[in-house]
Image (cartoon, rainbow, N blue to C red; front, side, top):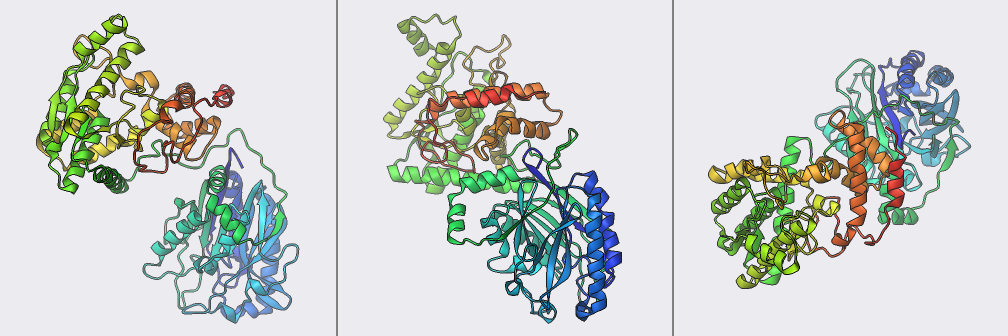
Length: 636
């Protein structure tokens, strides 16, 4: 492995039916490419040495002797791809029976010969005419079901039909420790089968919390009755990392770096996986290669890293995701209103993204429950830093949505408070800022008492991670509807609403999206523009959301997160800039836990959440020293 990644390749070479030496030559020709790209494991199709469609020739001595010779040549030539575990398909004789096998070679040695477990004998398949199933095999040191330890990674093998069974061998292999599954296949093509197969591979990788490398026979197989199109997939825990272009007559190779560290973390974190392992223990023969890790200085991650892990890059998927999240938020708020018999909500509307999303969710919830939107009281509370732009957008949006709204300036009340506590209003410190946030919260709470309603919180997941909220100010509400939504996604959810909006509502929403993120707690510039920009103070939210995702979702070290961030953001940020904000994120994430320990209720909408009653439980006085020391060791 390099940095916790294991490079796998799925390969398909053209075959000539019943010409194992020619087929071996085609396989060996790919070894230079494997070596050039430092591939750790490569899987070839089922019966890639003789071809899958040899029929009754499988019981012909001439063919079997030719296969044995070809396998020996492949074994010897594997030294040309040093350190690569090469898995090819061939028949293998054992105790007067013939088996459909995967033969694993590395550095000039045969490591394992793994027979196919389930032999299909229906429709177009009649393999039982030639082959015996694995359960009839007697295991010896290198023949039989096995898990191969290669460069510290456990590799399991299954063959074609094995995947299509109710409980594939890969399930048992995974429960016994296999982290990468190689599948050698010869799956013919019929209408609709490709999409089903692709989904099957992804689902099996998800079910087993593993990486799954699949290679199926292609050009050159007999077309007497069937057609074979090379199908190559590499999937990881439900996600397709790489696939080939279909209907190609040439050799095809796809490669991907699978994240073994992420797989191991998910298995450790998922208690049900371990419980299943204990209840379904199967002990496989253990074999090991002689290969060792040799991470070169020029090693580059062969994998795209999404800079915005919370936001799908595919527009169609993003639209579906937005619709789903909105419905989760609406369903959550609807239940809370029904449970409290409440028909009134109070929301502080600032003209910023978070309060806008909360207001939109509230309006849709009232529509779903058949409650008049006038039961929503939006309150705009201009303060010392409020700009005309945000104030006008807030008012326009509340008018367009048809909610009840009020405007209450906080300036006089806050100045009186400054006088009461003896604070100089010319000193723009944390007291100056937080006094405004707490005054706004007091107003909202008291209006909620007046209207018999409850205060709807507006703060988002990213602000909770950074502690970017005033304790007992905007930090507090009766229900925090945005608590599970990261800042990078809030903008897209607001845009989602804007797409179906018209007139003044649409105009206001689009301008809110384009407005710099700010708490507006410091006075504006001389020309009335926002002076206090959040991302200038705590850093870009796209970086913080990236850090947050990999800290919570996978528990990665800061060093690994930094490496991934450099890959994800490319030239957008200098390495020193990424490191600077990673240090700030880490420090704030730890020392602001006390704010998260007493959060209001709020719905979880994605795989990452900071609720102290659910996904994230950490003492408020935890030390960040270990993580900060790791960051200090990072060299640029």
